[in-house]
Amino acid sequence: MRILDRYILKSVIAIFLQCLFTFLFLYVIIDVFSHLDEILKQKAALDVLSGYYLAYLPIIFVQVSPIACLLSTLYAFGKLNRNNELIAMRASGLSIFQITKTVIIFGLIVSALVFWVNDRFVPVSMSLTEKMKAQMESGSKKSKGKEQEDISNLSMYGLKNRLIFVNKFSPANNTLEGIVIMEHDEKQNIIRKVVANKGVYSAGAWKFYQSVTYEFDEDVQIKDEPSYQQEEIMDIPETPNDFLHQMLKPEFMTIAQLNDYRDKLAKSGAVPVIRNLKVDLYQRFVSPLTSIIIILLGIPFSMLMKKRATGLSSVGLSIMLGFFYYVFNAVSVALGKSGLLTPFLSASLSHIVAFLAAIYFIARMP
Image (tube, rainbow, N blue to C red; front, side, top):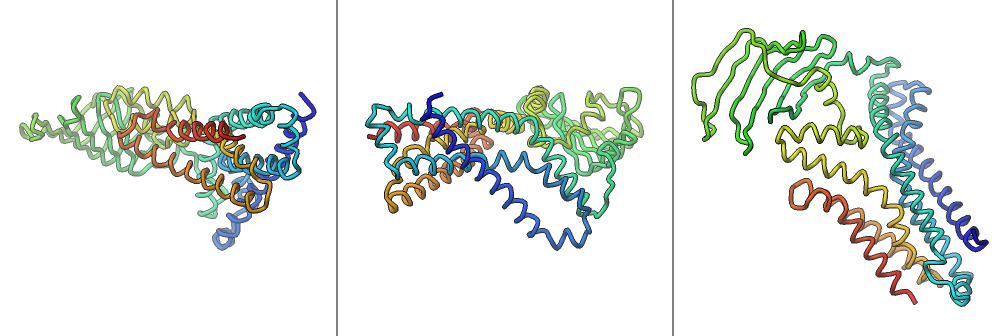
């Protein structure tokens, strides 16, 4: 590595780490003081409190890394420009790419690190912090395992194009209460509805008690008299484990778990849910690229930061572009989940537009 590359990289890394630790510190301090009355009221144990914020560190890292990348880029190249070092570099024949390639490589490394942390640690951290938060709010140092807790208001998309709603699921004894099953055809028209008071899983099968089955015709009208059964073995392939895993929200799943869940639901015909899961899955791959893209957006503006007025306007403009980038991403994701954009385009549109804008601004630099 050239001396010049080391000089630029050292400046960028130093500011990046300072921003990162500052954001981490501020987040913890602000969160502690905003919940201080609740913490004191519940007398949350110090080990639980420290464990909660330690578990939150991967989430904060993923959220603040792009902003830290932007600020470090603005500061590093802005300083070089104010000291006329950029002019000397350009006068020696170096191109914009040759000057910034080290920072671009650094952005790619940060993006790869964010991808790894986001997949390996963030889902676990989110699940752990949610559990710890509930533990602190209850004021108890002990909490039951997930396997022993009752789950209320559970819903899931099952195989054979079925929607299953359960008022309460007790993993301890594999029991469902307040069951409603809606079975649909390929056009998502309801063809069967099963209502049961209770369901127990035993010997690899579900036995429903006090169940009523309704059959529907093509016009979604009840065909015959409902069928009542005091006890009935139901043909449901889902096991208690499948119901237990419904506690996991998409943000609590790794990429592999999210992909497996999507593949499983693909057989159910639940089109809207599958589409939402695809958007979430594609986002996992493209969202870590925010760090490198926001560096590319910051490069042209940071090189204009020579005079005070120009520097302030450049910082303001680049931060404003970053803000619109996040807003545009939220809008495109919402359009994807509503079906107006394809899942892949929905997850990547803001990144594509921001990347093209960054290349355009860099190409226009003298």
